[in-house]
Length: 596
Ligand SMILES: Nc1ncnc2c1ncn2[C@@H]1O[C@H](COP(=O)(O)OP(=O)(O)OP(=O)(O)O)[C@@H](O)[C@H]1O
Image (cartoon, rainbow, N blue to C red; front, top):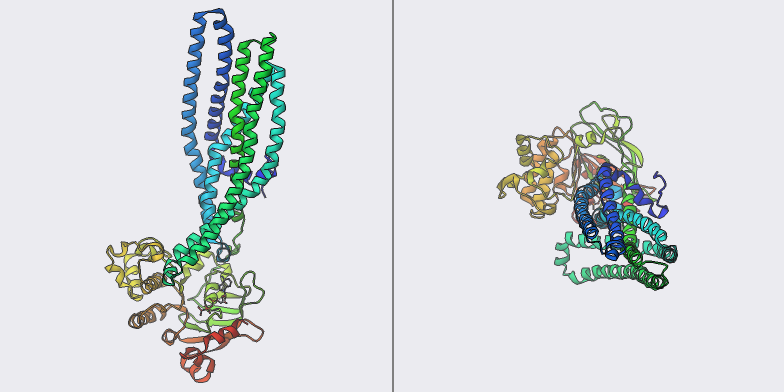
């Protein structure tokens, strides 16, 4: 749990970021001292001016005037050097903080389970990774330094002003109190507004991302106007929220900016009267006004600093909302090593998606002997893909267990489980990298011969004919390839290195009849000595399997195993199987029954 923030509850999230500052604390401290040094020099200049007016100017002492003039020049030079040093140290430390935080967030997102990613909009995650982290960088780069510098300026100049003239100094302090109260009142409103803006930015990012990924579907259905209208509605809401945020900030600023001018007028008025009465020297009044003017920027910038700090705090809050989520799929505390050739058993397996009361899968019992291939057949939407996702623990079973050579998959280290079980899903995901990088994703140690064999098995030799062969980049999500090509590459990736267990979700769905036949042949040779679980939608895929398991509606609701046997045996005895494989079957109706 985070320790309580010395800045108060409203900055608790920012306070939690202190561990990211720790590695750069030496540089940050240098930056602070340098900034303080330049402020103190800034304070020194009006005092020097006062000495010049009251001393050499009044007495006509030329030599002293030259000396004080040289001091003023030195002050100016020193300030320039300090500002340069601050700028240089700032860049390396603040960019370092930004990178560390982004790395942590990215790594955490990779650790989080598929269930988390199902329930979060990707745009919300992207906006946290980009605009929220930038808000935090701006805070550490500018706002934090100026907050400290301003605090020191207020304190040092405030004390000096009171010492120089208690009456005028008292006016300055007195007028500072209502200003602080106003800022405090608006601060809460501003915080709420910022959160709404940042959340809406995530909504807009999600929309942009979704329409960029789905551009083909949008264009082919001629629905650009519809999607633009949807996007525009969100963009308009964002603009409204941003305007509300700016309005609040403008109100705070108006009050903040009016304050120093009012105080300056009062100081001049009372100060002139004091000079006229001989209570104050002209030089001291000039120094007082010049010193007070040093407070004008800190006062005026307090609105901006408040905004930047609130923005960074809300950004940190949004980032911790993700960082605080514990992955539902965790490494086992005690691990066991399976010893065997790859026996896969589903033992009374049940599963319900998070947030759903009714189980999708129930009482599933299937045993696959080492080297055996089992096809999973069932009406659409009954849970075949879900069943396959349980093996590599993309989701965990909610009932029963899945065993590999007698060991529960939840007792295997995740890396080992996922290297034992290779998967190819219906939607073949490729990354914007070279063909080779995509192929060796799960087995970076694979050699050239293994890559070639995997390409042969998946009938993906087209890859060698691409402009740069296996080094050709496949574009974002592999979009520069056809659906069938993507599917064959995903299949080659799964069979690379001949894994002991292969889970294939309808691996032939996007292939033409000719390629399907060739892939089938090659797959048959891979599956001969691999334990294979294959989701099948058509007879040709079913024929790859030694045995078929038919899923259907369970009596109490959900999906369960309704029949199993060889393809030919089931065709003879099970009407439901014949229906499923026949073209005229009413799959939609069966699916409804299955999930009811
Ligand atoms: N991430 C998810 N969260 C909640 N429900 C989901 C999720 N993914 C799938 N479902 C639901 O679970 C059910 C089974 O989906 P699944 O994709 O496993 O079916 P399937 O049998 O493979 O379908 P198909 O034959 O069409 O590929 C569907 O009703 C689907 O809406």
